[in-house]
Length: 262
Image 1 (tube, one colour):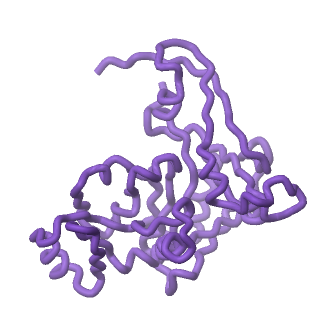
Image 2 (cartoon, rainbow, N blue to C red; image 1 turned 135 degrees about the vertical axis):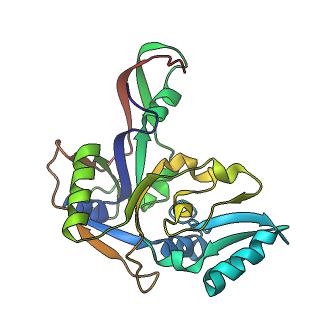
């Protein structure tokens, strides 16, 4: 029995040169601030997100706004949004983050034929996964290191490599979680800002097609939003650990869907 939140396969999409570096064992963490900047400065709302790190959307005049001003002081950013405001911690801009696409047990059910029993299930990636994360204009030029490519990551080897590298580098409080796209469906929401920075794992529903999971290094803030954090996890073995492909693809798998009674 596969739990709904259990990852079956992981993927990373980007230019071939960067995907090859990951395959060779080099993870590069960008800051949340860089994702915000990509959306605001470049207009790329697939790779970027102007609302990264937002922990609240409240009506103007809500008592919680003054409460957060008192608790967070200069670290609080207040973003006007019509009759509402969104709240974010400025310090969240500097948190190193590595993102990837996670195909979960619940996705298998959603992709199924809406019936019980053994069946072949297909999964098609939203085209924005490819066009937003690499140069789509060079997709047919295989000699280019800028053509979009996809890393297929086997879950357990990836978790082991990342966990070992974090321990070796004495990096504590690294959090790996799936992104929640449901909470921000509400007109108003509030996520208590704590040291765990749980708001970094919430995004607006329009990004649900990204099926995102991410690693955030909470205790390793960088000095600038343009800085990056490098983590060496060791090279990949083709087939055993995953694969690197230069094509836009979909995949099929056989699964038996069963009804679970509470």
